[in-house]
Image (tube, rainbow, N blue to C red; front, side, top):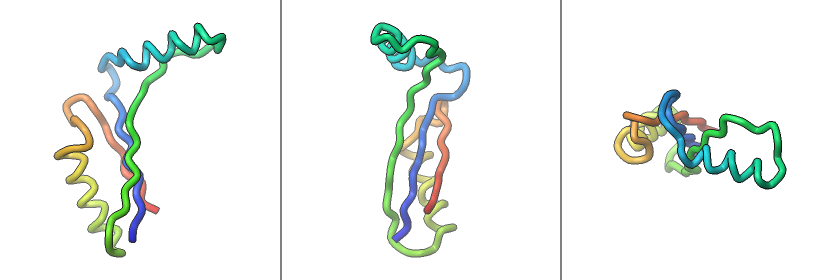
Length: 80
C-alpha cells in the first residue's frame, strides 16, 4: 500500500476570497501581522500496490480529472 498526499492550491494571480476572509478573521481575533493568506485543499490517499511510479501516474490522472481544477489550481503529489 502506498500512501500519498495531494495538495491543491490556487495559482498565483487567482483571487482567493476565502483566504481574504480568513485573513480578516485572524486579524479580528488579535493575530496581527498576518497577511496574504491563501487557502487550499489536502487529500490523503492510499493506493494499492507497491509501484510508486504507477501510483504517481494514477494520482496525476486523478488530479487532472477530479481533484484539481487545473485552469485555476496547481497541485503537488508527495508519496511516502
